[in-house]
Image 1 (cartoon, rainbow, N blue to C red):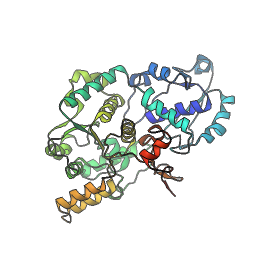
Image 2: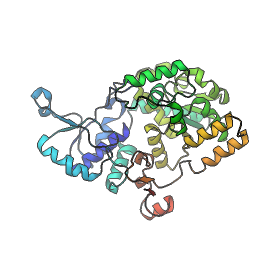
Image 3: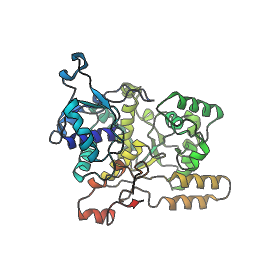
Image 4: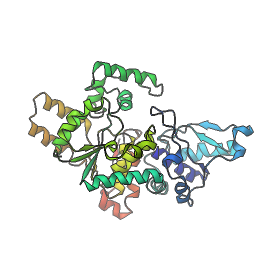
Length: 396
């Protein structure tokens, strides 16, 4: 949601067009009917970008369906460069006057974009997109409660029903649960991939770690049982049964529902995006952030933590970890050998300054702009000192 909004502001700025405050998707798995104004501070959003782009709260009446006007809808091409918008999209406005982009995820490239436009994306992300006062107030309260108890890890435990159904990952699930997840995947037409072999997906590192696997990895990384861990996630699939091993290893595990009174969370119930905003705030403020899957939220949190001084973010190499977990669990690797191997695999995966990895013609596989917005983290020669010499590392 955040990255799509940032991209559309950047496109409006590039084309010198007026942007209507975005409508949020209400048809996804989460069935959240929250509006932009219920998640973000819309006045701050408009005012803080006043010198970049004109933003209006709603479409002017003369373009309303009531007055017989039919707004032209289209999805821009994914991962597009500025040239596409200038040459193919801008001419449409002289004829159509209004365009409704009905898909906005990943519609602007990670790389090959001018520095000025990259900085607009950052300005939206880091300054303009503030949460509502209600969300911010409760988010700061959560952070304060956690910090008063000592340092804490935010664990983005992405072991939730939607992720497992979408990815086809059923490792650790019962046969009945695997069937339930498959039924759900078939029920959502926009999840295109239907027949998935879970074992293959897991071996490729494409599955979120299970709670049981996560417990072993945290122990191997040196987190002792007194570590305070905040679970930044919705409902874990399998509930307390699947959290039992992790909770036994780390008794100081907490969730927002354990730290706040039910009345404080009541206004956010059934609004998963607003609940996720609270987790987002806690994740950014944590001493260490560990995502068990590199989804959109994990990547955007990673980028925020880089922007805030390269705060420690452990980016798990799931492909390598699955190999090590299986070797340890079948008795090939002793605990000490396993722990040493896990530690050495992550020495350079702690959110340190680095240049974005560019893979020509494979934008989905290269580093995501919002996970490492390097153009906004340094200036000129300072970038060589911070990130290393030369351009972004390229793979062809």
